[in-house]
Amino acid sequence: MTSRKKKTADAIIFVCLIVFALVVLYPLFFILNNSFKGKFFISSDPFSFPSAETFSGLKNYVNGLTKTGLLSAAGWSFFITIISVALIILFTSMTAYYITRVKSKVTSMLYYMFVFSMIVPFQMVMFTMSSLADKFQLKNPLGMCILYLGFGAGLSVFMFSGFVKSIPLEIEEAAMIDGCNPLQTYFGVVFPILKPTAITVAILNAMWIWNDFLLPYLVIGVSTKYKTIPVVIQMLVGSNGNKDMGALMAMLVLSIVPIIIFYLTCQKYIIEGVVAGAVKG
Image 1 (cartoon, rainbow, N blue to C red):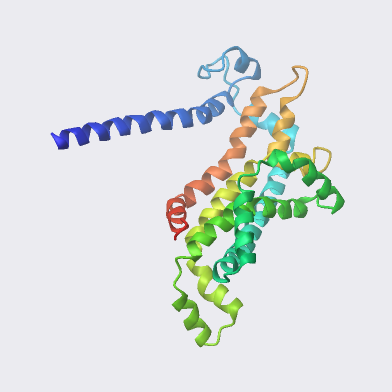
Image 2 (cartoon, rainbow, N blue to C red; image 1 turned 180 degrees about the vertical axis):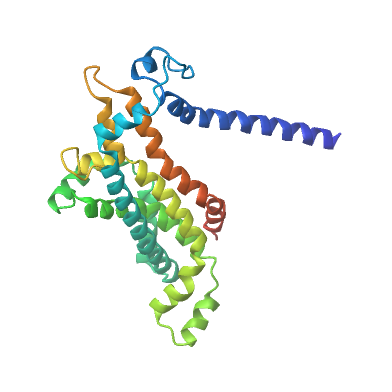
């Protein structure tokens, strides 16, 4: 009887997961489906499959690339994402290591400040941040990387700190006995052990930065050559009804392909890194 109940419970869970997966994947399928339909047919019948009458082939993709300059935007998005993620991993891991190993009131206060920053909504600081970005000449791709480092530090330090607590001090002491200074100990011994959490932090931040619209829109805007993918795609929405839904759908498909490939390549590290970075007492 117990075995039968367990099988029934497993079947119910499986069905629920299938339904949940369909709910999550349907918007992606909706976008992909409509990217091959003429722009006038998307509004009139958005849920149907492309037919001989409505199928537009690659016309939407060509129009989208022509209107938006997506390739240039993709270059800036790749630059900002890669540099920002590299900075986040390097500086937040070192910060977490110092906070965890050096026990003092200052480091404790710093840790709780980073944790508190995780719950502060971006809307609370976006106007002040925009003013500071203008004052310190951060309205460029490198400035964006610095801003993303600040906004991504909270979660990253939190995850790295939890993992560093699980690293035995004896390993570092052995490195010190062998003549390593603190930097050599960190980069030669500690940082390689942080790989699972570092990959998880990279995935989470890369997905956030790649898809972010509001921060690049506020800081860089639409009048410069440094526009990122979300900003140029938003330009397709248009105004007064002047919008190309076909090109918009096509560009959305192209914009999510790189991040999906990156996620599928690294997904096995996510659970491992999150579990490894759990806070321990």
